[in-house]
Length: 374
Ligand SMILES: C[S@@+](CC[C@H](N)C(=O)[O-])C[C@H]1O[C@@H](n2cnc3c(N)ncnc32)[C@H](O)[C@@H]1O
Image (cartoon, rainbow, N blue to C red; front, top):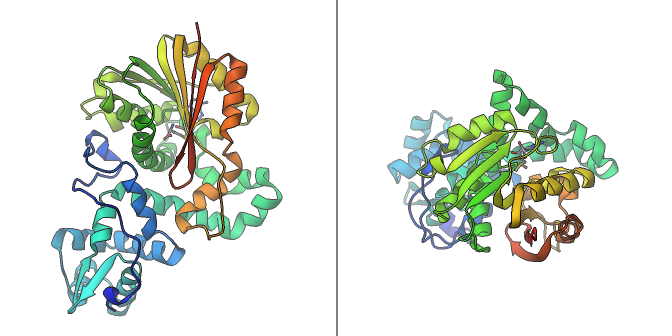
């Protein structure tokens, strides 16, 4: 099948070389010439379950690797090299061509220019494939539960079991592996979301940042990378901190990032910060705990310090169908709050000069900032 004959797919915006190493690539500075929202191009290859499954199989078989490193190839050669059945590989190539991943001309197969650009964000592509795959299984057999009884869905669904924070208090090998799995997903998302957030708020005046629920340290790392005067403390659950320490260890900014193992709800948190951040953290918690976390943040701030919240807002499903890559966010939909909720809580906690910015990524995000006052 010749992909050139098919309907043109939406491609990535202008891209530049420098692919990231999945998860382990924390130390790899991203090219400043990249457009801040360009990373969203990965979604154009994850529009439905067939497109996404075919792409995941192409990664699993090493087909994408082979085509990106070896360039143009033939179906026979690929069949041999990836160890596939000839008819199976033909089917896969047709699906990849229909999705704009590969192009076939004069019997030769190569990656399309659009997909090569998306491959610059390979960590994100693979994380989104994995995240959506888990969500799809829940969607197929649990969506009625979600509609009838969200609490029951939370107890039973794979996606919520994946993000099981209790395991992050235990250092057994099973817990490590499972915690690593979701940390890899949050890290990949945050690597690109952080850039957008940091670009919308002047952080150059800050010196000491505390990122509560800061996960692998990716948000802190992006902050330090762009603001040489900042030193960051990442507070998270014990196992997550251990994974995070290994994650940032080789980054040039590593000596400016400290991990503190703790429970942000119950522990006395470190103090003396001029910036405290919650990035995609507060939505995990019901109103009472959210309030508690904000009070904790206020105590950690010096007078005049800033609280910064960067969170997804309510999903807006208008007219069109939802792409497959959005399934995980659909399953968390009831957790995403209006920014007014965060603003009201900040006001109640004593914050002033509260500002809200809306930023449209694959879903709406809100950047809410407030000053602790004297
Ligand atoms: C949805 S993840 C977001 C992670 C990160 N901020 C990001 O945007 O990539 C929530 C984070 O909160 C952490 N967390 C959960 N409960 C916590 C607690 N009681 N104290 C500190 N951190 C906690 C989790 O381990 C996880 O890293």
